[in-house]
Image (tube, rainbow, N blue to C red; front, top):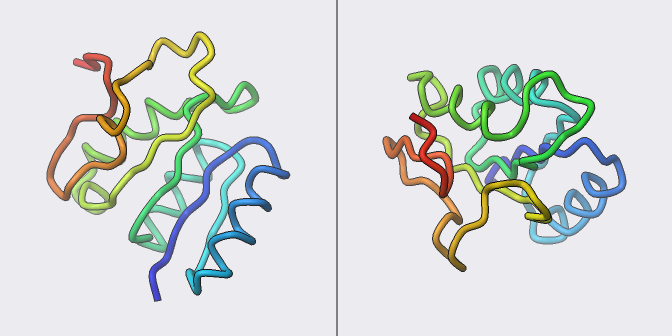
Length: 114
């Protein structure tokens, strides 16, 4: 069974995604902020992370979470799918361009994060 970590600051979004994924027989974990996401990724080793880019109440935002995950050897191979409304996020991308990162690929978004 695939394990998916849902990271979003809005509880209703996490619940909607959780219910939808569990219908498909996925095991879900959830985090409400960037710090929780990093801790769960390191301890639970999910197959996929659905990561909200904008979490106003979080000390660590989505792009920074992605950067840290991809730079940590224990989490670098986890696929990350970034989710956002893209309203002024500064992370607009072409359709389909940014849906996941193959293991070992360190790119975290359409922006140059270097």
